[in-house]
Figure 1 (spheres, rainbow, N blue to C red):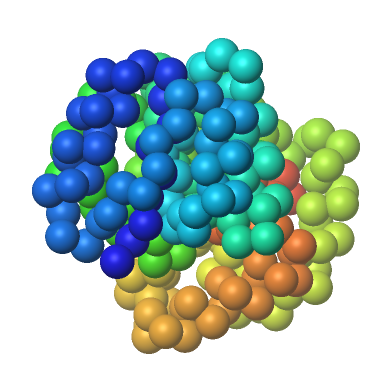
Figure 2: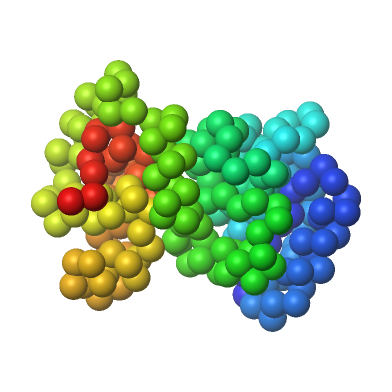
Length: 218
């Protein structure tokens, strides 16, 4: 059972998302928060697997909340909710540790799919949207690029192949098909990549890869 938390300052949005998640027998809504501060309190009191977090909220916004949630002893995976496609706040939330983003008008079935994917360790980023987002705010010429390249040099050639595909937004299944691997092998590679790069999730690994100029488009 996936234990979910909804974080949004709009009570109607919280109610709508709760009703949607309750239609899935594999998801249980264990907490609802009206802002980031309350989200941290509830995530500390309850075990939460996936948090759906709005970006713009009073007292503490979703970006700051995501940073704090990911630092908890048992951090939930985070899906950022936003009204605006590819705005800088979404990028900042991903850099803070969110595992993906969804527009609030996303098809209900896709929201449920996202919760399951993120709970399973995947990211919910459409490949083309991920590339546009990262290209817009992340550039290989920035000062971070030198450090990023040094960290990536620690990886094996095969791990760099996997990372390059993560950087364009591929799922584990996509990577497995592209490189002729089992999905279980891809998951093992991803785990080692995250440890070697000292990042919390595959989205942050993708951002670092783009900083380093690692490009899977070949």
